[in-house]
Image 1 (spheres, rainbow, N blue to C red):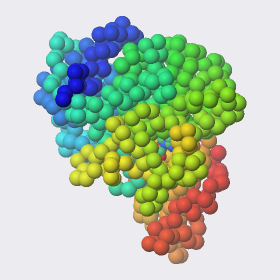
Image 2 (image 1 turned 30 degrees about the horizontal axis):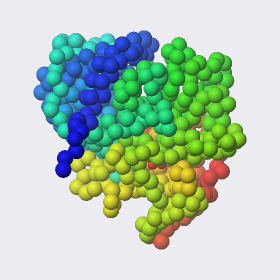
Image 3 (image 1 turned 90 degrees about the vertical axis):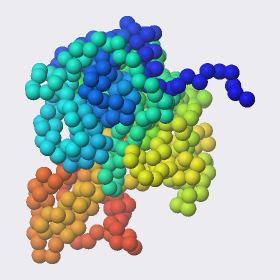
Image 4 (image 1 turned 180 degrees about the vertical axis):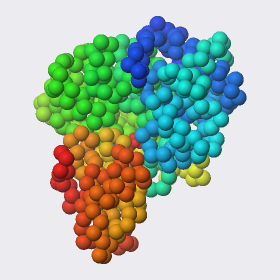
Length: 532
Ligand code: AMP
C-alpha cells in the first residue's frame, strides 16, 4: 500500500528557492578582503545563483562536474555553491592553508574542471597551476581583473532564467577533503539529501537555534565542512548572514556590533583572538546571543567568560565526515535547576546528538560499552548525514549496520551527553586545523643527522596545540634544532613547522616497532614552549 503524501525531493536548490521566494528582502552582508562591505539579499543571491549556473553551463559544465573554490567567506562564494547545485554539479571547497603538494593532490584527485579563487590566493594558484591536470577554467572571485575571467562579469552576462537541472536527492552536490592521519586526504561527497536534512536539523533550538530573526556571522570558513552547514541552514529559515573574508578580531567585532549579529560559530582559537581584542580595546558583545564552538574541545575559561557575558555557548562536536554536526551543546531538561558551575560543567562536554544521529562507544573487540558516564571507548556514529564511502574509494568507510568509526575516544552519559576524552588519532590541532604528525616526522627524518623523530602537540595558549618535534640524532651527529627547522622550511606548510625541537637518546616503541605516541604525549603533557 502506498502512503497518501507527496514525496518531494530534498534538494539543495529547494533551499535557495525557498529563501529567494519567502525571504527575498532579507539582508545578506559581505565584508571583502579589500575592506569594502556590500549588502545583498536572499532574492539577489538566488538570482545570482541562477546566473552562475547559466555561466557554468555556457562553459560546458554539466551534471556531476566538480567546480572547485579556493576562497574565504563571501557572497560570490555563496551564490557559486547554489548555482553549482543547480546544474547538478559538485561544489568542491578547498582549504587554501594546505601545503602545495596536498592542494595539487586534492585538485587532481577530485578532477575539478573549474577553479574559482580569491584574488589573495592568486600566487598559490599560479604556483600549482602547472601541476593541475583537470582544471580547464580559472575564474577570479573578487578584486580588480588580473588576467583571469572575473566572477561578476561572467554572472552579469547571464539573464538568470536558468532552469535547474533534473536531479535526484541522492545525487552528489558537495565535496570536501579531510586530511587523514595516514595517507592522502580523503574526499567526503555530500548529497542533496544529506545537506538538506542537516540544514533542517541545524536550525533546531537544541542545535544552532536559528530563525528568520537571527543574524549569523559564521567565522568558520566555507572550506571547513561547508562552514558547518550554516549557509544551508540560514537559507532554510531566511536568517541574515554576515560574511567576513577577514578573520581579524577587530573586523569581526565591528561586524558583530554594527550588523547586530545574534549568532556566530567558529573554532576556539577564534574566540581567544576575540577576547584579546576585547581586553585591549574594550567594547561590548552587541546583540550576540549564541556562539557555536567546535572543531576542538572548547576550554572551560572560554565557556565561563561567554556565559558570564550572557552569551549562550553551543559546544558542538563533529567531523567533515558527519556534515559536520554530530552533537551540539543542547541544554538538558534540568538546566534551570543547575548551579552556574554545574551549567559550565555540562557545556564543557560535547553535547547531545540531535534526532537522526546515533552514537555508541565500543571496545577494542568492537563490543558496545555501557552509556554509564564512566566507560570510555571508541566513538562510532551513524545517521542520514554521516559518510558511507569516501570519494572514489572502492570500499565503504563504515562497518556493519552503517557505524562509522570516528577515531575519537569518548564517554556517553546516561542523559545522552557525549564527552570526548581523547583523540585516537595523533594529529596535532593548531587553531582548529590539523597538522599531521606523521608527515612532520617523515619530513624530519630526511634531515641529515636525524635518526628518528616524533611530533606531538603541546599546549599553546593561542593555537591550542603547536607541534613539538622530539628527535634522536644519528651517532656522531651534532645537528641542531635550528638545522632541523631550516631543513623543514620547504618540506611542509609554514604553519606546520615545529615550534621547538628537543633531542633525546631514544624514543619509546611499540612491539611492532611503531613510536609509542601515547607515552610521549604523557611525558610531554606539561611541556611549556619557551615562546609562550
Ligand atoms: P574535522 O573533520 O577537521 O572537522 O575534524 C574532526 C575532529 O575534530 C573530530 O574527530 C575530533 O577529534 C575533533 N573535534 C571536533 N569537535 C570537537 C570538540 N568539540 N571537542 C573535541 N574534539 C573535537
